Image (cartoon, rainbow, N blue to C red):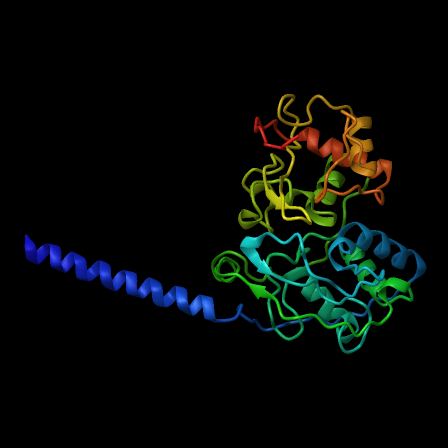
Length: 317
């Protein structure tokens, strides 16, 4: 019996030692790099394409990348969950050395779709990836970044290297890896198909589901609907002061979601930040004034097509 216990103890000791070695390796190593396989792509800009790219950036990119001087030169991500570490958003002005100007159109497209930068480095979970964005919308963002809009004019701003946590490094090895680059064109559904277009907006273009699900760490980026807690909220997200704000349940449950709301109340909340009870929405949720009423109506239609999920979220109101 004593020999068996000693043997078990030795085996456990070896297992613990191996786990410690693996943990130390992850802690002191960098986030993995990959081969960048940028496609041959040249975006032909026009005023409409640039305008749409600017509108999309205003809803998706500016919150993280716009500095106090009004340029998209990046900044400290004060609202990054502490569990992920510390990071600065990138300089995406058209500076040819420090900004997005050093990327070709194909390299930008590959990065935005897969998360792999031109040098092979992988962008951690705090940088969204856009595997479902239509080619047209993707090209609009690239055209905008090349434009003469004042916010993307060259800035040589440099930021410190990111300080990813052990959790981030672990997730980048077992869960978050480069997404596949599409092997066929991606087109958005017609806006007249309200449910389909609403789905495209919330999973591909504006990507609402990532915040309004269970947790960033359990996102399913290739199959959004399989994300745990899909649109049932509860994702703990810090505001700029580090206070945790749990995301809202957006399913049609009348008690814990938005099932008792009207479409007009939803439009007022999403576009102008005014809730039905008169209270303003709170950061990290911001108004999406760049969306048209018709677009918000399609989001409403899609959310109403989802099953109601009874999930009481502690909103601390």
